[in-house]
Amino acid sequence: MKQGDDIAGYRVVSEPTNANGGKCMWAFAEKDGHQYFLKRFLEPKRPREGSTASAASRRIRLEVCQEFEDRHRGIMKLLRPDARGGGNLVLATDFFHEGSTYYKVTERIDTSSLEKPQALEPRQKAVLLRTLALSLQLLHDIDVVHGDLKPLNVLVQKREGVTFHSAKLIDFDDSYVSGRPPGRQDVAGDSLYGAPEWRRYVQEDEAVQPEHLTTAVDVFALGLMTHYYLTGALPGYSDRYGSPADAVNAGEQLVLDPRLTDSMQGLVRAMTAPAPRSRPRMTTYLTALKDPQVCALVHRRPGTAKPTSAEPPATGPSAGPGESEDTATRTSRVRSNLGRSKVPAPAVPPATPPPATEPTGESPTPTAGRTSRVRINLGDRRQTS
Image (cartoon, rainbow, N blue to C red; front, side):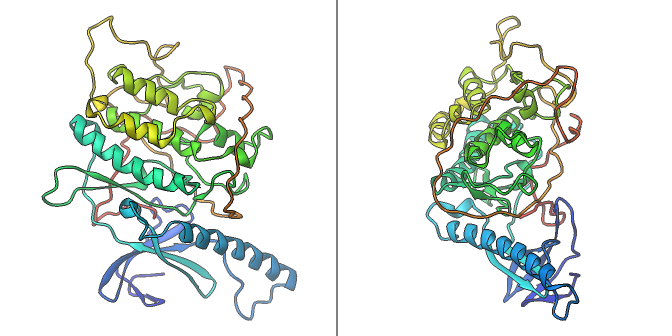
């Protein structure tokens, strides 16, 4: 794929890039006078015509490709662009293969810059979070887990003449039906925003089975993102751990910014609970945001701050109040066997805390001084939908 190419009628109008694309290349494209975002998957690859590969090899590759197609088309069937309330979901409009390569197409979205969401007024923060939560509720109501919820997968839009920003949720390539995730080696996600049960699943903890990965995975990530959008930083945790989930799995309590209101501290604490069943549903989250002041930052008098953790604030992986937190590089693994039935999730067995002197994370944690971007500019698009 290169600028000027015609791919199934889509003319590539920008230089393809892999920026924040995981195992994909992407570019802007035009077709019939409309602007699109065109994604080219680097894998899987269909067998080429005239290939000298053995019959067994071709059969295996075709089985993998069929699984890939079924998963993507299944999610597209569940997530319809015309669904009521789905206006803030940026969904695929086309999915096809040309030759041995798969492509996915979505609408190109005009977005605004929002480098510091924490600088918004409480009512503006509440509206931004509500639009994100409503999209997530729409997914959860049909038992779909986003699977890679993080600021990079949220486009912030502010239309001309409109007072408030809205959040558009993108990148459903790694979504799956609740309780039916891809295999341990194939499930996608971000270690910085991943839930405790997801971390244990990818770390080959046999006590965590596929049915334990439910919509509560997204709730944990949204709890972290809420803290970030309101304060400019993720909750704190000891630098002994590679991610918030690793700290929670070790029995540690995340350190919340004391400027959060008591109600918001309680909400974020519940959303980041170790047990998935203890986390609130999106209805509870949306009800809390009806009062915009829950999103305010309270400057308490010295000595009156409500304790937010049994341990002092940590340094290392998490930034302090007011600083920015980076997001980890997205890893896209998209193989899955899509099912559609509801699977009640049993309680996740508690994790065995590792020794305090050894880190449990698999991926290095970004330093606190870097900036997490929640925007996509037309001139420098950094999104992966």
